[in-house]
Length: 350
Image (cartoon, rainbow, N blue to C red; front, top):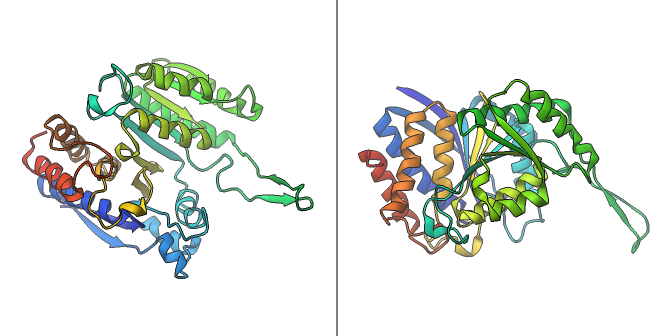
């Protein structure tokens, strides 16, 4: 029996609840498909930061020996804004060189989208966001007297970084509908011309994949007006964060979204894209759909493709059969949704 070593970080707020729900679905997948996970819980969180537990690079380094990491959510209203996220989330992404942020945009049921007349066939795309470069998490320099300060930080792109994320996106597009769209703002941010150059250079290796490029403002407009025109989007770290949340909204809300922070062939991190939502913590009403979707992405990464398809199919079947009512907090009991998906996985009903 194949064994995968997992680190589990429940985190803050609703994070532990949705993670527990997702692990119950993973249990069902293990029983049906004959593999095993060995799980290690890590008590890393923003709440822990308030108690003096600061996650350091030295603490992250041993995680290289694991196969995957499942993360719930990080964030606490009393913690310094962005600091625990910087230590844990950016620490994992840059410390483990998780250069791919993979965010499928999946409409599970026609009724979930706010877009009039759109169906599940229209909203089915994946956003590939570069995850280690750009301006995110960079040091900030302040200068000047009070009241007249200047604040600056570097936006950094490298040839290696742009070409490897563009290549990953091309490979994904080749497995999907063979359409790749680059999203940037190279007319105003001239340093992003390096993305156009990478698209041309790497694209020569993928003549079967159709390509186009658009500026981020136009991409946001077209994502709302004509989401069906997109298959795979590749974009920068900053723009990917924004565009993927818009994509999630088009698919019904942040509760629908799963994310993989990936380095192919190495330990990678999988999580729902929603936040810690502390006001819903402990009530058992948080939607576990994003966390369950993260488990499906994790299983694909671990080479358990049949199990990944079963979990994804069980989610879709749950919406079709009206066993899952929505993706917002309060649309169903957290564990009721998890048990419904787990039962479908066990029984092969999807």
